Length: 100
Image (cartoon, rainbow, N blue to C red):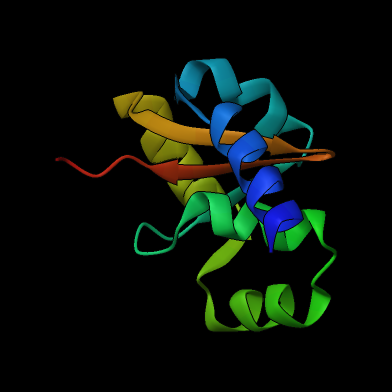
């Protein structure tokens, strides 16, 4: 799908590394969604953009995505890791950057 490819390219161009301290205010407002490291962050963002509620619900149920919990937030506050992030308003999707 050319249009879907264009959307994915746009998401990819808007995906960046960010440290936790820069995301804390978004967490405080409840808008941070954690994405498991084995998932493709751009693909998950595309599901949000497309309002693919069925896929999103399955990911929530499986625990592969979730509103960021206090335990992870506290750990990230201590370690200030580098994260991948992209915005799909009103959400900020984040993923712990795995070592390359």
